[in-house]
Structure formats: structure tokens, C-alpha cells
Length: 281
Image 1 (cartoon, rainbow, N blue to C red):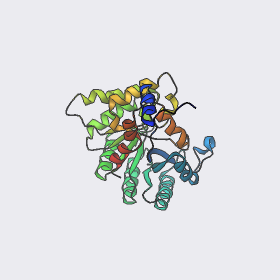
Image 2: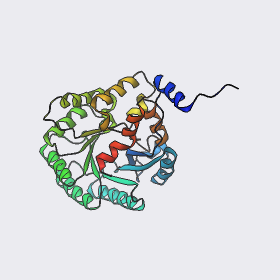
Image 3: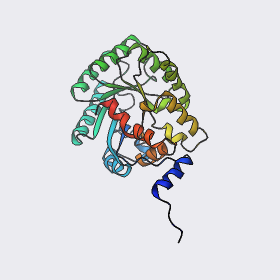
């Protein structure tokens, strides 16, 4: 019988071949969805009640849930979804952080809802350049108020120029904590603007990037090495694991990040440490 290589030697062989050992700890999923109305369900069939099972299978012990409101929802409907998410969060103490939807484009209604969800213990709010001008004075006032209430602001990253708009927002409001979702989407190289900003000592490092959607899209593609390189350029301390659940199963999302070829130390940052630091969990 052929002798088995020592575990440490086998690990060294894997690392030399560019295959990092998978993260073995408990992860934080920084981008999943609470979707009680079923907008995302037709594709996956998943419902909020399935999340605990998925978390256990993927070794995820904490999750950040972004509220998904009905299409064209008015302020009352958005409040209802946020209230449902708040109730779900209370059922899972210490394991779920809530990120609220906001009514748009009514700035006053959004500000009132922002204040209300902060009182309910939400961790953040979500904005989308699809429906908002991130440079508008009322939007900047909204983000400034969110920062004063210690809320993290998620910004949808799939839309063109999202990285540049978030960059301008970050410069205007250095006290804000911003998450550009999906690492900027299919134009993920746009986030290199933050590497350029890092060259200037007066610019804040107040933007994080989650890998939801984009890791699954590129993990087994010719662009995987480029995506890994971009993450390292903007700083591995700012990259977050996100599943985009229920659009992607948690196990599939975690596996895709592992297949991108990050080192064990980088995986620990992405899967755990960065989210803990961002949300001060």
C-alpha cells in the first residue's frame, strides 16, 4: 500500500499548485435577502424559513439580510416588509443583522423610515443607483443621517458607474460606512478607482465590497485570476463574502469564493474578519 503523505506536506503541495485549503471556520454571509413577498423565489423556490438549513450546510453562523420590497411598493408596503424582517431578526438573536429597504424616490419618506428602522435595531439600509441619484443633496443628507445613526449603507453595484458614484459619495461623507455590492458587478474592474484613491493620504477607506453574485459568475472562468487580483488591489481587508441568497445557495456561493484561489489568511478575512470589523459584531 502506498504511504499517505503527511497532512502538512499535502497542504504545501496544494498551496504550491495555487489551490488554497478551504476556510474551515464559521462564516458571516454579508449579503443575503429577506424576501417575504417572493420576488426572488420563482427562480430558487427558497423562502425565509429555509435559511437556517442553508446556513448550517454552509457553515455560516451569522447573516446580513437585506429587505426586498415589492416592485413599485409605496412607503406603507416598505414599512411592512421592514417590520417583518425586524420580527424575523428577533427570532434569531445574535445570528441575523437586518438591512432595511427604503421608499423611493420620496426623500422625506425615506428619511422617516431610516429613523424608524434605526430605532428597531437595524444594522443598515440599502440604496440603488437605478432609482436614485447618489449625488443629489437629499440622498447625501440621507446617507449622512444614516452614518450619524451608525447604520451601514449598502449600494447596488450591478448598475453602470456604480463604483464611481459610490466613490464620490465616500469622499463627500468620509464618516459613512458604505458597501458596494457585487464588487461592482460585471464591470468589477471599475472598483480599481478605490485603489487610485488609496494613493492619496486624505481619502478615507470607508467602502467595502461584497462578492455576492460576482464570485459565482467568474470563479471557473478565464477572469477568475483578474477578479482575485482586483480584490487584492483594493485591499483584502475590505472584501466580504456574500451569497446573494436565495438567488444562489449558500454552499455554492461559499465554494465559488474558495475556488477563486485566495490564501487561507485571505479567506479568513473574507469569510469572517472583515464583516465582524464592519458591523462591529
